[in-house]
Image (cartoon, one colour):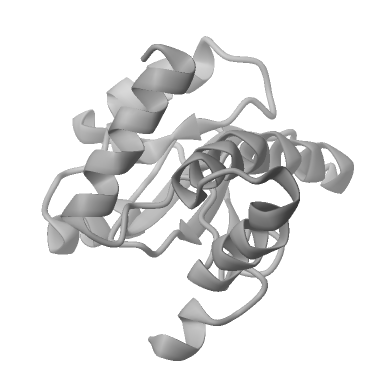
Length: 175
């Protein structure tokens, strides 16, 4: 774990940590998948839908549910083990019979902009050290600036740091 904290790049990204596969159309589907089928039917091809919103909450039931997934049209499924206690994010989108890799790449690009991003402690520390003396600004304000610039979703390292972060956000951004 300590090794992960000292990396200068995030350990998991959509570029290097994704499992994708296509699922053929099925002639029959069960009632547990009707809601997903209806949602996908109302969306154009290559529009992603988060399966986590439809899946059972128990991870064992969810895995079995996902393995048995059967829909009336061909779909692409992408699993992203997000880490940071968030589990695996699963996305699904309808695809044409002839898979279009360019369209799939576009979906992944859109999802990479929407998925929470996490940085390592080392990355945040490097930013604070680099600009602390230049900007003559406290590290708590630099943490807030870093979060906003990078869209980072990190959790404070301590309760005290969390309280400081909340006060800084309130003072700087009024929220």
